[in-house]
Length: 258
Image (tube, rainbow, N blue to C red):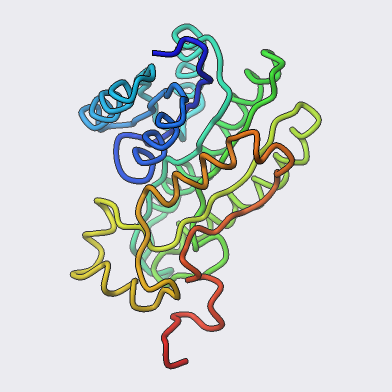
């Protein structure tokens, strides 16, 4: 293992896109702090793969939406890793319910986890980066819901739209400290959760995506790796859509006959 590697903290890295990002970063030499909320076994599986790629890993439990837990997590990170060079805000939840049926507690949970969690982790990471004096990078994981209204995803759309503007204001404020802040917004990505959303997820979304396929976690990880690298050292405040052209089609849903 490389003791000189930079350290990335990936929230919600016990499965799905977060796990894919952790793998992608480890492949190019990052040590990974793996945050999880409930799925300890999944976090341990991610850690084993990271270490199998020759990098160090740490497992950190915290619910992203609670300040005291985030404070404790960053204290643990400081003790175990001693530094942070990259934060990937990936932890998120969603509720499928119409505006008229959405429960207040579900709205609060989604905003707390997705948007407040992004704020809390970004604030804690930026303070630690400022103290270390080496700059750094924060990458927020958005969604097509950053700009596309999805019926029955009221709270999720609100949270992801908020993340896009939070990205911009953080980029402006943290730029003088050498900290870059960007957003990566996936399109239709096949992971454990999305496979359950439709009987034929790949067929349903691949057919209306201009690239004529759905995305994989590796597609998202590749853009995160780029934005975290020195090759993107003058890129901040941006949102990059990793969607095969889905959200840039003239109409949505896009079809070949349109």
